[in-house]
Image (cartoon, rainbow, N blue to C red):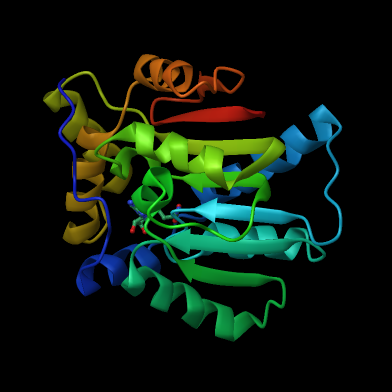
Length: 227
Ligand SMILES: C[S@@+](CC[C@H](N)C(=O)[O-])C[C@H]1O[C@@H](n2cnc3c(N)ncnc32)[C@H](O)[C@@H]1O
């Protein structure tokens, strides 16, 4: 099935509220657990004041888990949607995380050099962000600018199904009882996503072929490594 991009930023209030109120805890915990496992396996340790950036952090569910697990590390969630960051900061107020903050950053502007981010990260994490980019090279070029040398990467995203029929089937299988707005967005996201082969080509083109992309299950791939 040919890729059909969806809008990059998630800005409509109803869309953002539906996303923020949804329970993605299972998928979120895979990201956090996967990062913990990778750090353990690769013998990488995080030090006081190291920076973990959650790129396209949305309502901050993953960033806030990461901030709890590594309280001595600085965690910053970046997103280009002000509405998403309003949700993320609301959750932050309830938790008083001292090591977590959010910044409004349009990631294409980092890629093209129109905007500079003042910090570089020891760890870059993203979940369901890559597929939003109309030009995926911008995502990877931005990450290169945001990374310190030997930066750990852990990214997870949806796999584009092979056909429209399969896309319908997956939407119904995983979100049958969810609000319509979430179903609509999930369907659009599946169509906008990339295949494992496409991501592999993107990494080669970006000079990031040290990062490896693996299919995890029917829905997701992960991109992991240190570069
Ligand atoms: C599907 S949400 C995922 C949010 C979060 N990572 C999670 O897993 O809950 C994708 C997020 O990427 C953000 N995003 C997409 N394109 C972006 C861009 N060009 N610059 C900054 N943020 C972007 C959207 O605004 C949205 O909040």
